[in-house]
Length: 97
Length: 438
Image (cartoon, rainbow over all chains, first blue to last red; front, side, top):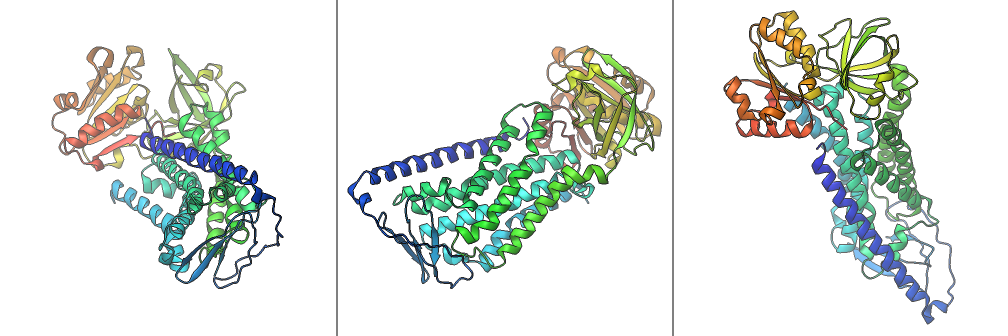
């Protein structure tokens, strides 16, 4: 069979992709809906426009603050990486130097 | 230069080009500094997978342009399409894991954020990436895992150009809209180059090639039907094509009952013969309609392609092995042997299940009885069992110094080739026609 090994690798990759992405989306939505059902979700926080583009590695980035989820911080060699979710519809993954 | 050396250099070139963006990422981007913790490491891998996958995607279009120079590197267009298929599969795998690695850093502490990243949102760049990924998965799945009719498959496959275009928009927009880092200095130059190469090659294949390379127009002069096999003889309307026996051409038949797609067929006539012969067996939807063909119908021919001819290789002692309809390229080569009075010693094995499948039996038997050094060995598998390398050794003697040519179904070729390699035959001396390169 032509491309036998390739078909096996692609097939395994597709299955893993479906499983991983499916689980992430399922559990992610479950987590989101669980949270929305809780009292904390009723607190309304001001939402700031946070559109910015990266023009250099030292550029200052603004982020959107939200009380719906805690920011996720990790630092690497002096660079501050801040990931903030403004609300469940607004995906902003911005790296702050 | 040996064929295997050229092929090795071809693969090395592909590897270097596809890894170039990863090198640029390390040299002019965040580099090794990013691999200090889990979060930034997986995110960086996600970026690299996307860069390399996109480059491979662009290279698949380059390979499908059917440029002679690329064909020369890989030893025939049939081999080029195998490389094209492998690159396409690897590109898909890398692109599948590109978004997964990008979001892994949010797992398990913030799965909902990871989920948002993978779903449609107001960000056009990621939406385009999602659409491109879905399109790529569907179209590659159709190619590898379905048995769609050829002309329908070809039609769907051409949508990969649109998928690539969506991916191009994704790679240009993602940096400003979603990714907060530069990826690497000069990223826009890389994105422009890879987009130009991919879209340029696709446009050439789909729109420009047929205008730039005039296909030869031939007329059907004779049609002979034997059970489920057709012998079609073609004569040129204008300047005849120059070709070697054993090469293949893409033929488009102009008949209202047949689809307009061009299909590859091996040439069964001697080199540069004015009358080009092809044998076509009823194997699928297209070939099942060959009965509607008429003498006088026009065809357009693109090619020739391939390097499957005994004159291309030096050994004066050759073994040719054909299965079923796979004997067709050898028929033309036998005519060359008769015509050129070559001193090459040739043993031709033709294996078949049914006597009526032994195409060209008369001409091959004639060559056996009239040409010094040519031996024809018909092998009826239903009576003698499947031919194996030991059978060939018993009849043709030691394999030392001999050149081997194979044409037939993949499984048939692979088993004999593997046993030849185990017996010490160098891969350089084994040549196959990848009859089923899709």
